[in-house]
Image 1 (cartoon, rainbow, N blue to C red):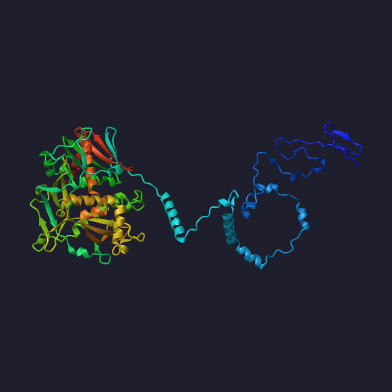
Image 2: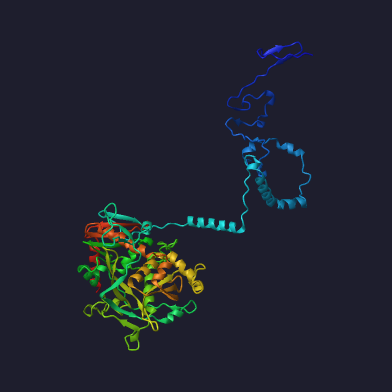
Length: 597
């Protein structure tokens, strides 16, 4: 039997043995598979077994890659997409089948319970033995993490999420700069941290050493300038420290009592002694210890503030506005979580906390001193200086109806001192001392007194009542982190005043929801110079910042300036302002004071 191949040029060919007719073939140029209208007659009704495929549909390239490790659930991964690919049949065909046994054996139930753990183990083993490309030589084995490493990673991730949830609050400026103000200089606070006190270099004959540009060469000063007392520069009086407060602790705490003594926060322009120094050329940079110390440590500040500067010739006078908050004590200014201005608990907002901390410092500074009532018995508890308090009103100006002037002035001695900062800057400042410490066989020690306060005593394990006695160092380290600007300022004020020791108190609220009642949980003495090293305060740096700001103002023509701290950025700006700036507010405050009197 001989069969000849058909000749395709002719649609119908005949041979000696048989005949073959080529069927009609339809080419589908738009998709895979036959056309919808090209089903043969004998296959009518079976269109459901054909699935439509587009040519642009993705086809897996490694359908036969046996080196890859596939999860057993991958077969069901695209169940919804492959649903159309399943063979469809009539439900009547299921009637011919029946389930013989649908009860799992005990062995099957036990294996089912252990499947999840085994599945994780098998997947981990198979992933280790196979990689994406199927090359067993490129396997990267990960080191096993210890329990400590897993815990540390968990805590680190938790900290990241906690920081992400922290909302940054926008603070309001202490005073809004006006369009008429001219920007003289801007400083970034991180650059102020690099400042150092410098002095001019001279040769052995006293002649200046010049640089290539003709300016006199300068070098970093090896020590901070020393202060000297001015003639008749001691005013006021000081009470002696009560040694019973050395035994105060968390178990034997003392209630913080309210004082009826008066405190005076007099600015530079209202101090007659400082004005006398400015007029007679005693120093060319003049201010109070609060203003000078605030400028010295401004690189550590976060809250907004402003200081007025007046320049006449070479004389620079630092002043403040009547409604300025320079003298208020801040709370947690450098903490990561600062007090919220919109806190639902009103007493925990920054402004209320600042007022509370200021009252605590006033009351604490007077309570730790020995009592004085004017009798002979208590006369030894107070030391008077030749000149009395310069800011108490005269008897002729007293008003019997004025309750604010009732009571004696607080135990404060005003000490006017002078420093030779460099060849061109001579600083004169009014400093404050708060008490005297009596030592047997030794001269009395001058002291300043301040208080750190806790306003949320019931939260967390850092409660002062629990850990202050046993972990005072940890408590103080936390306060350094949260209030470094405040501690720097207090230390700078103590150094300017020439204090021998600095008394710090730890005061807490009696109840977390009340800002009116407090208790003293402990006290501690510090030497200002040692405390400066402990809190990383560089004396050359703080004097260098003051020197830089004075030189910046001196380089400008005579006039009035404002040193302004940005409320939300670490930027310090020096503005030149018109002469009549703040004069309206000053006159309004003066008139209101006259009306009150």
